[in-house]
Image (cartoon, rainbow, N blue to C red; front, side):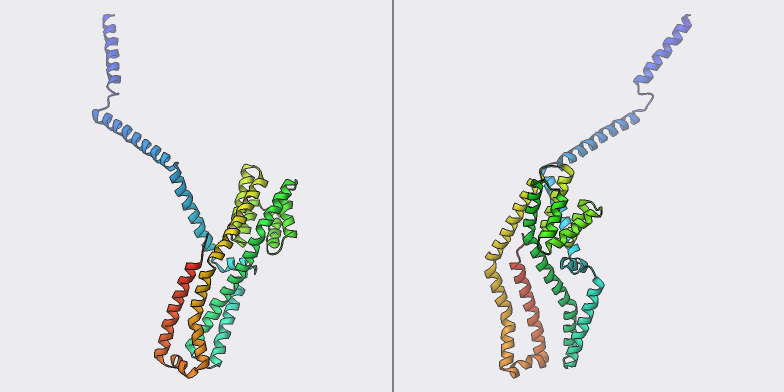
Length: 325
């Protein structure tokens, strides 16, 4: 009995020693574990500090600015394509036909100048300008005119939606009224919007299609308001009323900027047109005096340098008077 008690006591004491010494781990293993715990705690603290720093107003503002710049870059890249320009001008999306017309126009101008016995280099340059530059300028001009008409009537269309919602009409019926009563191109774009919704397209996708056809800030604001109201709820009439006020303020600011910059625009136009106008007048009055510039090699080089610097000056003046807000 005494021996049994002694053995059990020895086993108990040995077990307690084993537990207190860390299960038989070496000092190096215990140090490694402590280092891992310290490093892990440091990493968690660093992650927590980074999370807190990311939630500060400055960090959120930087993230929002970065996102907006990325969206603006994608928007500019999308609007520079021929298909986007054709959509904005209301000419469909037949890019192949556009290139065919451009090629035919360039070849036609080149042949006309060759028949008129002009220099081949001049004929090729004029043909390239007529085939590559003129059609792009035409669709750009048509797109700007169409976009201006759309923006001028857009605030009134939003007021129609506000009044319709206050009188109890659904949003879809208000959009239909805009498609019937508003002037073109606003009516056509909203008719296409309501047709897409009627065919089962979600509202956000239909609004994104509208923005692709008419890439303006006003349409983007309208899409954001409707999407937010659809997801979170709220007083849609009040939100659209505020949007209408903002759009009218933007239009007023644009007109004010146009009025304040009218003098600079007129000065740039006069400065840009004066040298070519003087050359044309001298050519009409004394053609022998000016023909040396076109027949002599030195005169052609002078004309080339003058055209380059005139182009640079017009480009710089355009950048100076082209205000964006």
